[in-house]
Length: 218
Image (cartoon, rainbow, N blue to C red; front, side, top):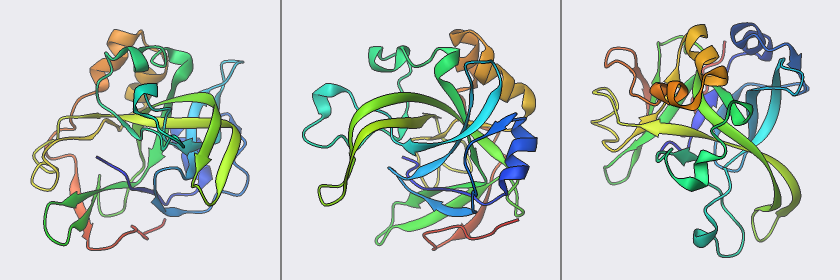
């Protein structure tokens, strides 16, 4: 599972690359380590049809049968045919999750964090995400966050040859071009889900090992 990623480009760079017309994120600093339940930027289509950059909490609502106490949320979504996820696959609930790298842990003892990116300069890409509004409790028992939340998660798929030696089961569904982002945000469900596929084997490279955060910013 991908439970750690980074977004180290400026919000101006995100807006320009994803063509977001509205930005409600405030002063958005580089985020070298984004973990589950943290707030992070996503791009969605607003009610007026304009793309907007907003903050959301990482972790979609869990299937009710798996929740006991505080819902920790689901960060990675693999089975898009599940009834639990189908209702959020409509265009109005799809989003782009801007990122510059993501982390998987090698199955060693101790486990070693391994960071993947499109290049050493960490170009922007987007995870194929979904979002929703949800009322309930997030956070921890010590510091619960009660109320309405904007939540997000992203799709995963088979690992490509670059990721597989580190994490054989899966990798995030990554979008790298404007056409792919348009397709994810607007296409009918079947066409959109064509993007739930591994990147070509030569598209990713390992850019760092052994750190919990990818602190490169540009």
